[in-house]
Length: 448
Ligand code: ACO
Image (tube, rainbow, N blue to C red):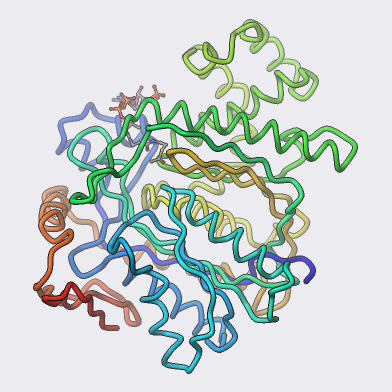
């Protein structure tokens, strides 16, 4: 198969959200800490009628219907998620309900899990399948779904929730440049979920930030090495039109792009302009450990890279700022923001993607874009996703309601024998919701 990649996308996030400004005031944090300090506007959350399974059922059904894909045409289904509902039964098997109904049970693939990286693992699996000898000519389908919730404390405003479905096949408008991948994987306790009785992670926030940036440097350098080896010339930021990052919160994305700019400067100072060369020169002797700790370096790089950030990163930040960290969905929601904002002018552009999952696993890879043919065209994908419409029709809850919901979900996590309120007043038609968990922990969903 040629030009394998993403043919179609649909995204779902809960209509319930809380404003970061209100949460900040409620938590007694200093004004601006969540909005400017973290760079976030709003955070979506699942109420008691939604979870990662209902969101993924919604995203998959919507994708199949809007792009008119016969469920029999799906030959592989891979799910990325770090939200554990069952330690054995995969989320993929819940999604099989959609396909069984149409007589298609011949679908490979299960779930992939490693923090926010599972979606990327699922995507690579599907792309590799289409490129392989075992491909049977049908489509692959990748689903990322997560609900990010944190215990009370500084990490709580960095939650979020969403699901995204991506159709994989040949002759794609969003085509993988598979030869240029750079990965970095290692054993670290920066963010993990060892307490199986709780949905909340154990997180060392500061360590996770440093790990994220160290892995970024390592992936970028490897990516550049591979590019140079294959293309016979160096890679620098100017070789890509957009940079999309896994986005736990926007401030880290700002720092990450600045870090790539500093990496370019360190590899070859002629990659950056003269003003930047002068401003960054004092930092060139820092050891790599020192470079992660230097606030002055952070400020200087963000300042000199600001114009490039505005052009190459800002268009990717809409959904992550409005919805929050969506874990496995986050990177792809950022990419969806780019499609939404720039779909008319993306043909011929190269997009670099950075996926990070704590623990840790990280890969930097790239897409080559072209307009494509309906229904698999960039402009049709933007229309189908209807991101403005979905953002506009949300309902803002006061922080008390958000916190009350988290309290209820703490009790419901791992519980059996309950029915939900079945309150679907906020959900749009076609949305799946949880109705009941019976005495054998079996979960039941209905569609509005
Ligand atoms: N106005 C403007 N900015 C402010 C204000 C204010 N009133 N108050 C604080 N800030 C700034 C700080 O200076 C800081 O910015 P900086 O990093 O540029 O200096 C930022 O707001 C955050 O403040 P901190 O004091 O560093 O925040 P805190 O340590 O309380 O929590 C953290 C932040 C660590 C990110 C926490 O939310 C967390 O642990 N989140 C989960 C972990 C995470 O997302 N890690 C990322 C990678 S791993 C993953 O994806 C899960």
